[in-house]
Image (cartoon, rainbow, N blue to C red):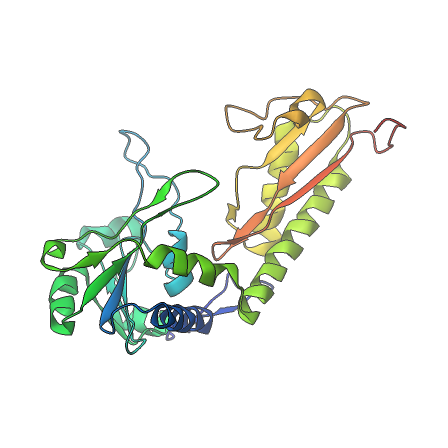
Length: 299
């Protein structure tokens, strides 16, 4: 078996994301935290995303990594933690120890060395080693993520793990600094955003070419989702597609409650507000045009 490379790609024709993108993000984060005057021996502790079950069934929603964790580490698997030493910039990932039965259902169980090479991280250990590792570092304080998203009003949740009560923690200083870091894109991030915008734009054109009276709104949504996955390797859209015709095009988040279920009529306008996501970087594009291909004077 070939050794994993420290990059992300869905294969030929798709964008190659070097894991140095995340190493650079970690460097910017510790530099900003130092300038902000955090204690010298501070350690950032982030908890990655966990699988979410569908109510009481035996299946789960398709896993997507938590965005701040993705920004600093680029890890696509669930159940990871990551720490970042502010004084040295050294990073360590902590992976879940999976039971043997996991392999029967979900595939190969890899050792820490696999993820060390795959993500270009200095150290990879198991989650149960997190508390002991932190005690060995003797941190002045653990910087934990906690802050409110201005759009949703929801809060980023701080990491929690057995033994955290034995450490001094700070939930106020990390979030605003990481938000500012994410706001300013690196050259590698700009290239990645160019890719997701190019894939999304091509998918919008494909939807325009298919649009005609008589089709269902869901068919044009399906066309967009097919294009971004088939042509761009984007399994996720950046948000729920908003594909509405006629009066549906006036609903800001149409499609979130059992829709789209409308039928395109001659004389309607069609709104397509859709964007793809690749490596948890997303695009957001909105187009509105006549279903029959000709703008009326009013339209």
